[in-house]
Amino acid sequence: MSTLTSPEVQQTQPADLAAHFAAVRRKSLALCEPLTPEDMMVQSIPEASPAKWHLAHTTWFFETFILREFLPHYTPFHPDFLWLFNSYYNGVSSQPEKKLRATFSRPSLSAILDYRRHVESAMQNLLAQTPPSEAVTRLILGLHHEQQHQELLLTDIKHALFVNPLQPAYREGPLASSAPAQPIQWHNFPGGLHEIGHSGHGFAFDNELPRHKVYLEPFRLASRLITCAEYLEFITDGGYHRSDLWLSDGWLTVNSQHWSAPLYWSQNDIGEWMVFTLRGPVPLIDLLATPVCHISHYEADAYARWRGMRLPTECEWEHAAASAPVTGNLVESHRLHSAPAPSEPAAHPLQLFGDVWEWTASAYLGYPGFQPAPGTIGEYNGKFMSGQMVLRGGSSVTPASHIRATYRNFFQPATRWQFSGLRLAQNLS
Image 1 (cartoon, rainbow, N blue to C red):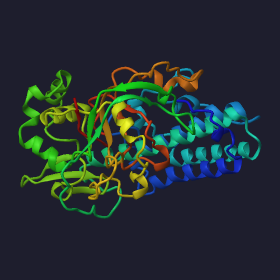
Image 2 (cartoon, helix red, strand yellow):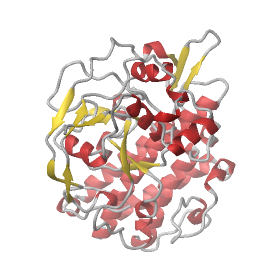
Image 3 (cartoon, helix red, strand yellow):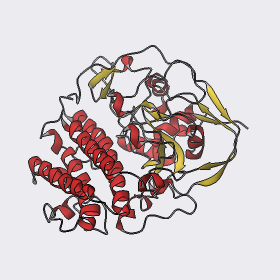
Image 4 (cartoon, helix red, strand yellow):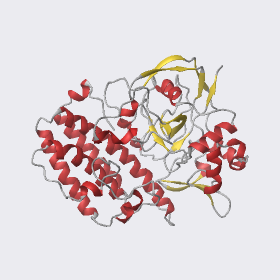
């Protein structure tokens, strides 16, 4: 990962940084308030991490990349934490195998919280001085890194609670039902030569750079996301049993994993569809107008093919989203699940930001001229540019200050535990 060293970054006052740092750190702890210490130990799938580990790793980032380098006479909290809570920065140290993170019964949760306080105190000491510009750049990167892990914490705990036989709720309270979704309208885009990628103002990860020109053929984009009701029609029509709809690897995955519906969908003893949410199990009938969530790229692509359409490319999506306001059903709404699209029409497609990450038809690759940040801190994005697909737009558990039109998320195409859904696209020519 890397940031842009823009004028806004250079001119940020230490007091503002200190307040922002404290606010982001408090948010991570607030997300853990509904959890028991036992909850925070669970790692239900190899892709996920325990909540306790998220709290430690985000702290490790500030200690490793800022305090060890920029605070004179800094004393690390514990010598073993340098490798114990390393994720995959091979230039820093070796690290334990990811799927074993649930075995970290020690250090205790109280020790992790002490670790957080130790690092936070040292960071505030650094910010009380005049930190070097590189330290400021890394601090802002670290805050966005922690926001990524806040989203992952909610994603991971949802799966952990789902596999618990009791299927407990993370947060109490109903999800309001709604009227049926409005029919899809279409937004036409004439194509031509356009620029995508970050403009250079404010924060960006290095994979959003450099800004460059792309040529788009005329296309149109659906006015809203695909709903649970629409996806249920795909299931009812035998979509999971028709090989002609699926990419080859997708068809192998469907059969080997015995998929027949999105992750978190199940039928009870009387044949009623239920959907597990962070508020516990909810009847699907109450969620029919909400965007379908927790589907893989393979499922999104098969659904689009079933409709005689396709997924948008990431360039098309970004071009359509570039002039849209960055507002939507994000984590600050406290809904923690996708919501129905607004009924009133808009000049741009609805639900571009929030609700669900939107699978695109684009493989995750570097932009022309992409250069990862130098040194160990640049290890994150570039080395994953193989075997992944791009998602855009954020979800109902994404922090609002963390998302933008140029943001590129990426996962392997079989991934389903993320809050992921789809929007349809078509060629105009």
